[in-house]
Image (cartoon, rainbow, N blue to C red; front, side, top):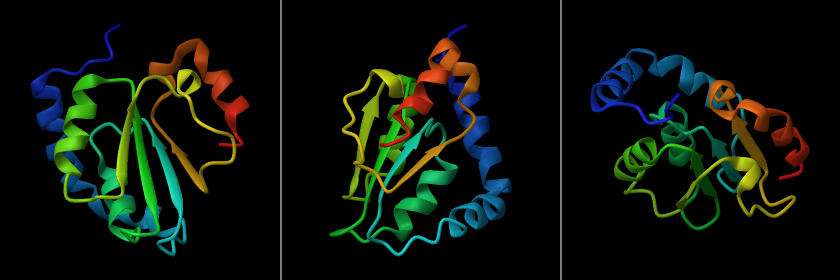
Length: 129
């Protein structure tokens, strides 16, 4: 199974995301972000979550790292978040990336089980990120 979506899948996923904006906003509100946090979002995909996170982080204090295994989604993320200077991007599976222990205040992982396969169990070994 390829982890790369087609252009049509990207288009419809982004479009449909606008219809469920409110639940994602409430979900991010539940994090209680003050703006100073360092956040890792794994499985950033179309970006319904990270846009709300990036809006809440202070440009000179908070930071968001978006991680995805898909080059297509990564290009989508970079295009849609270019106005946020405090965002960086990592392409690859989280268990294989060079991420220092205790380097993030919040780690968001959702809707990634099908992409992670056997690596899924290893992610929780990195719970101290």
